[in-house]
Amino acid sequence: MSIEEICAEARHFTREERGELFAVLIDDLGRSGYDVSDEEVAQRVKETEEGIVQDISHDELIAGLKFLPKS
Image 1 (cartoon, rainbow, N blue to C red):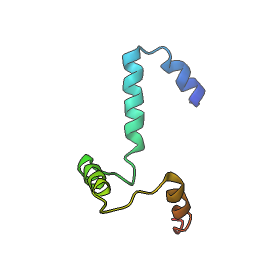
Image 2: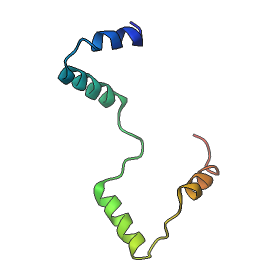
Image 3: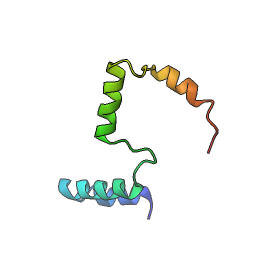
């Protein structure tokens, strides 16, 4: 069955059924290889606010990632 056929069938579903389908598909993708807890985010924000670590811009982050080995 093609994606187009699946979408055509899903359009016959109720809003709730489409939501359930969407949730199942997203869940099947799995979690990201990089997961950060709310506690870790809060700790990092605190460290930045206290000057323990220095924040960098998105451009600086991307530039630094270019030097990492490809996996």
